[in-house]
Image 1 (cartoon, one colour):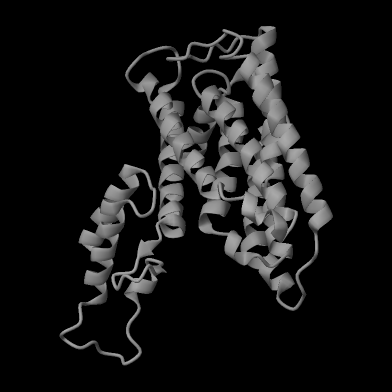
Image 2 (image 1 turned 120 degrees about the horizontal axis):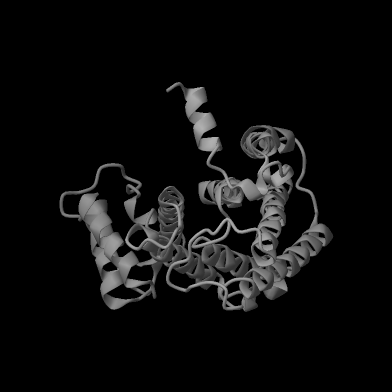
Length: 321
């Protein structure tokens, strides 16, 4: 079977209810758009801003964040009442019915719009770019936005309803909190003391992927009519998201206590720096030993409150370095 024949075969398996839908359901729109997003963010955007000062976009950012909070709240409520909240869905395992009843078609129509809203998440990256906040345009940020749009197109074409819908509901809810935080942060320095809960937003993202991975894996062991291929794709995306967010959490929030004591704190990267004199004396512990000791002390004494599974990963990392 040639590549073209295989593509045609896979494409023939798509959800007949969304056949012929345009924009967010059309790969001829989604794929070039994702490519353009990556090109602008990684190549053309930084080049464009290289000789320009950062733009002041506060009114636009506040308006955008308010719009995204309201929009995601709308989607969360309407998804919820048409699925789990309305008693239409099984909490344990829900298959794809491919039904054209009113409730199912409303879910599909909601998803068509929801993918467009997830495309609007790209504007968030553009704001970072125009303000020269390049440190926020991390691999996590770009990959997450890209995967959400790509998976939205995928599920819209091959089965939006069913088991995956719990993940969509949670995702919409997380975005309500996320854009609320962004909006408050954009108000200025005076709001920073009220944003102590930033790390808990990352924890919510991690919990989201843990729930998604657990729930979406149920059809692998229990046949409820949800396609196995979609289950594997969703689980794979969930694992990638979990790894990215856990890695971000460790680097950003697992601040270690200095081996020297005195109440000082250092970042993990700081403990690996070489001394100014170049070669260390033999009587001094190596940087890797200091890092291992600090990491174990961090997790043992819980000087930083992190989930146990993250601590175990830190300790495993210290043994492999």
